[in-house]
Image (cartoon, rainbow, N blue to C red):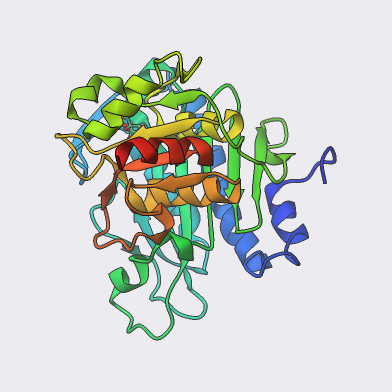
Length: 330
Ligand code: P6P
């Protein structure tokens, strides 16, 4: 399907024989996300021209200062998904509680979880930012009204996951369990066009991505890894850290290497959120042949205990993730 004009919606429907979730209703759901991210992309591109840079003066449930574009992105996604009759519950990094759009039912069976604008502290300095999303299915047989019972599922149960990076171009990557596929937004037609099918993460890569300013707060094993990468034995490792998870992950997916956000004294359980950051990116990483762990457990096996649960995250090429673990677990 390369070359011809294949939109993401076409792709889902054309592949539906490959996996059960890619039915027309799934394509309809995903079109709500692509519509929202097209609107967000347009706003991000004009951020310096409209009065949407800077802070709202509010603080979110994460204790982070909310940027104007955070709020805009959050409400845009909520509005676009609100028109999808098959979405029952929405979970956002920006919302204290889940939004119950419709009581979970055979019809309103999907749960969409998202970080509407990850890396938003970088907005004002024109650094790449992104949207991350995860799609779960409501569980059968659970009494309605107990939304957390539907939401707190391990990442291995995701129906689909993806991200959109707003950078020199706007690129969406998604998986529905049959490989990772990448699309570039073509502003001239307002559609995401197929760029690459079945993206494979390089099996290894000498790029490590971590905020070394926290070195003294990391576990000793991580400090030992950070010493090792600088030795002649390791060879020519390079450090790349954008400080925007979606951008650091996108580079890792395409070029290989490893991204690390270990526990720190300030964030003893890690800084990144399990349900709508680590889990969706772990699904993509594994579908592309990579790996993702919290240092003890595969990210996709972790059963969340609360909505905004945080987790340490080591994600990237399998050989590099295994190498980090070999130092951490010494
Ligand atoms: P630090 C952005 O605020 C974010 O949530 C991720 O996008 C990014 O990977 C991380 O935090 C950066 O955190 O502590 O290095 O500034």
